[in-house]
Image (cartoon, rainbow, N blue to C red; front, side, top):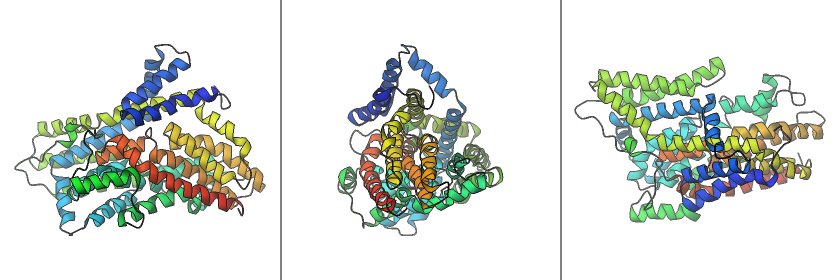
Length: 468
């Protein structure tokens, strides 16, 4: 199937079915599995089509990378808990006499600080702040929202991330853009126009301090947490295994907040940022591997038995299995959507509407629909950049103008919208994992805010289209 092939309206059915079932059944694994099965059957691949899809999708370098990343992150989190590092960090923060609002602001600032990886950020924020937010009766749904809204939206605004490299790489060869330097220059010029990402990050802070009032399911979740003391609703299924959440600190061993918490975090940040600067690619998985090894060595030197260290590491890996299963099925559904031409169909039925004044707004809208339907922002970038940016260059006579910046930003923002709030998105899954929130509860409470921000961004692009 080439770029112009698709299965028509049928091509959007698996993604739409997965999203619908996820909200109806509240079971993401079941919803994704059913969607994948229905999809392969609709493509006449027979009963063996489903296991074949899993085998071909999961036996890839990209899935192996995120699988290992998840396992090493689970190990680090387990080591944090076994050494009491998170409790020590919580106590250290508490000595600053923070209020309920300030505790949430800590999570907001931490998410913006860990900008280099949209995978690490939501897990790090959720895991380290969860003890504090639980104590101050902040709902897990709101913590997941804070962690999620400072991951992808921040990563796409910073020019020294993998996102910037990927997006700028897609621009090479379009119009007058001949090399990586020129492409990065266009990316930099597009940053101020990435309205959705800017507003997403800003809205979190405004919601925390109360300038933007809570509404919808989020308001209900916060009322439940404050009035009933329940950070999770009755019957909720947190997206973290009990093997990870039930780990208790090892008795009789004196641990250090610096050695057992800050040093491993510095190892992760140093390796990720350092490899990006030197090699042009942030080696996040390798950074967590190094941090887990360093923590294991430190724990042994502190007197924790070797067999206990290994048992803790295995418990950490088991604890992230719910997230890994969802990610595996989401990857499979994304591949199925690609095989069925989902994104191509969405673009084809809307491309005749595009005019210079409507181009940024329609680009944002189409990218948002594709990203939400497929749960992948980078896949959306790969589809939309080669389609929308060349159209923009035809309108500008191959000149780099504000219309080009706005179009690039609209693709980036639309992709982030889907990555930000789709139940199929790996980043949303990681935010639910870090916050130990029910995944569908996280999505249901976050979507109203994401939609409100997306609407404002769409209006802004419509208004800007007349003078770009």
